[in-house]
Image (cartoon, rainbow, N blue to C red; front, side, top):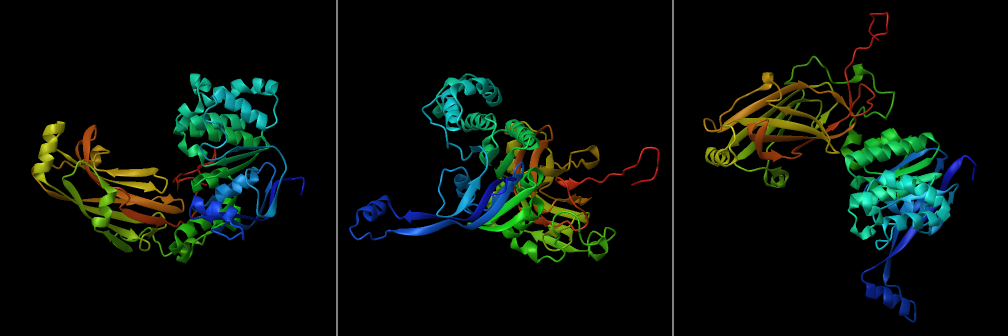
Amino acid sequence: MSDDLAISVHNLSKKFRRYSSVLDGIKEVLHPFRKQYHNEFWALRDVSFDVKKGEAVGIIGQNGSGKSTLLQILCGILQPTEGEVKVNGRISALLELGAGFSPNFTGRENVYFNGALMGFEKEEMDKRFQAIADFADIGDFIDQPVRTYSSGMYVRLAFAAAINVDPDILVVDEALAVGDARFQKKCYDKMNSLKKAGTTIILVTHAHDTIKTFSSKAVLLDAGRVLKVGDSGAVVLKYMQLMFPEMAEQKGLPEAGPGFPDEKTSDVSREREVEKGYCLEIIPGKDDEAKSFGAGGAWINWIKIYGLAKPNIFHGEELIKITVAYSWDKKILGDILKTKHLDSNLLFGVSFENNQAITITGLVTTLAESRKIDVDPMEESVCIITYEFELPTLALGVYFLSPGIALGRQSNHVTINKYQNLVQLRCIPIKQWIFGLMNWPVKIYKQGSDREI
């Protein structure tokens, strides 16, 4: 194993035995002729990759692809069936919630026990304990049994214990997903500082944007096998193609980073009329009712999207027109107005979100005075609203439109019907490299010159 490598995985395979019942396992052990009652399941097959010292590597894949099994082998919790794993350095791991801590021990006792497993004497842990307690910030619960902790408190203490033992290699498996937003940022800030200090970090998460921004390299697993290893952007793109196979069939689909097709090769023109291009029409049916919520009494009859580059596909910078037909029952809404003491007015809107449930924007009729549309629900019972705009250049991925209708005013209203994720679209940017969620239009000038860059 080379001195510049932190982890080397070569032809790694892991087999499990699956029994239909506990009784089958007992029968297999006691059978005089060693009859087999199990089925073999290979969680990993021929997995190979290297991780350099100081490298941040993301591991991504669908549920059941073998990610957690791989991490448990890297940490020495499981032994491989075939192949080998070489680790150069001290590993500290934050695996699935509940692993590593005894529920009957207090938080303090678990911290010291975890330190002992890492090879630290009590005197060394005495010096580190206060830093761990401060980072976890769970107060007096540090001296209460872990079984009394919430999932958020548990992960706070587990992460604090994992990062404050000077690991050469830090392994994190989805556990941060249960923390609140402030603590997650605190954790990623700490991991970024560890990365800058030369700590090797292995991160498993389904948040592909995090993989791209935090990791320089990624490993894509599918059904226990390595599908792709390399630049994190290219691996995430392959993951998206795996999740949505139809994306790979689109001509001009770019690899991550520079080298996009020239703008002249695109069939997208900013100057075209809104009505040109494709029109996508969605009429909510019974299968969509599970996506709806609200006080009731209103309906989204249909939604039409004009100007798409291809069916369900946009590239960015298209001129888009979204038309939504709303209707409602005057009597039901009248009753809501009386019981909730709301103004007699309807609010219409469409939210635009990515597949991590991050709202990109909300197209609402009362966000500004220029968009204000007063509709009295007692005077009318149907309304068609059109939202017209130019799409920004967004990052490669899947996006959702959620139309809704509310009763009252923006400061005091009740949602009466909203279809969450009613329309699914896919963005395949072909003009520019995207850093972050979207390309932000900007003019850049050098100081002392009026020439735009």
